[in-house]
Amino acid sequence: MSPPPRLVLRALERFHAARPWDHNAHFHPWILRQLPGRVGSALDAGCGTGDLTRLLARRAQRVHGIDADPEVTARARELTPATAPVTYTAADALTGLGERSYDVITCVAAVHHLPFEEALRTFRDHLAPGGTLVIVGVARERTPVDRLLGIASVPLNIVMALLKNRGRHVPRPVSMTARTRPADLTFTEIARQARAVLPGVRLRRRLLWRYTLVWRRR
Image (cartoon, rainbow, N blue to C red; front, side, top):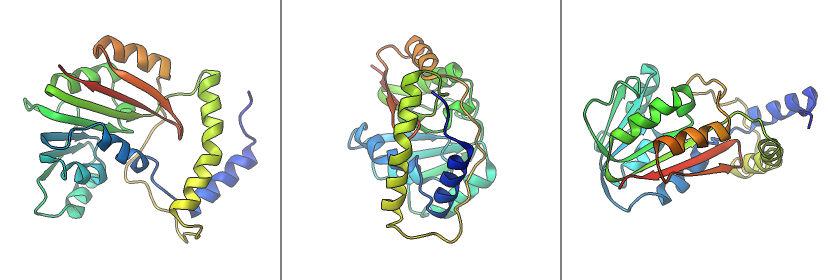
């Protein structure tokens, strides 16, 4: 199955530059549905500017956001009300967690920036008994199923852009809050490594170039 022509890709890039929307935030309601109504503590690893971190603060008594980019975490602090039970740290998610444990750990579109198995072990070891780990990640396309889901995501992506922007044209594109890089692992590789580290983990391919992972510690 050949990729779309270059002219088509450029046209899509122009379309979405004029009608930007946050693919990761689209999954935030789904993430919240995986969690208990109230928890004591939550960690948002790779928190960016804190959109999900602030949502977790509605459920948790304490929320900690961690991101490797100091400028991004500084912006997260600016956007977070002083009264919210939220703290931010500019640090690597694998080395900056200390000895703390959490009832909830989330990681959205960030785990592919880390050594995958090591990241899963770190999250597992910092999850309190009965806690929940939720990851929304990106994988490298390889199989026909991956490519089919990618193709199906293109028209859905256009529809979502129109709905979220209500058909209007945004004069200037919204800039990214952090540098990103492509995923290295395929979904098959991700699933194999995750099952080795997290027995009973649930993984699912998703539209919009994402996969989801949910694990509850007993």
